[in-house]
Amino acid sequence: MKEFENTGGDTRSLASVTQKDYTFEVFMCATVLIECRDDFFQCTDCGMAFSFLNSIQFDLDSLLTKSERMFFVYCKKTVCDSFQIVDTKEDPKFEPSRSWSLTSIFR
Image (cartoon, rainbow, N blue to C red; front, side):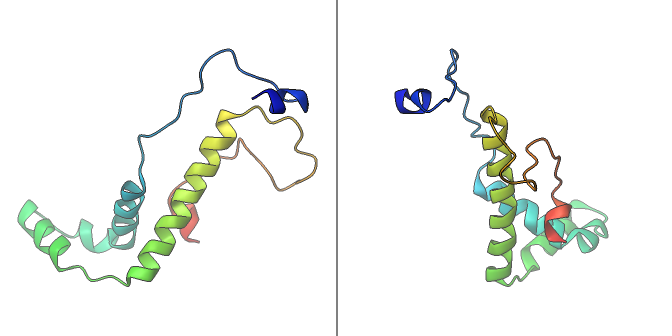
């Protein structure tokens, strides 16, 4: 922390809060729901939904890639929200306050 402070960084008086609410498994579930959204919404009762979810077959590489991408965006946003951005002129594409949605990741 002293090294960061010596290079012009700012320290916080409050302990930083690490968000541990959303693990990678949550993003895998979200990916499954996004991928099967249309078929899933055609289920009319719990039995149909359960049968549908048990019969789904996935390309594991594709599922993991999309889940990793979503998880990366979430982690990047969490980090940007946790630190004071000192200078963003180096990367004009960097927008820490830009909002994101799960479906925008799959475009």
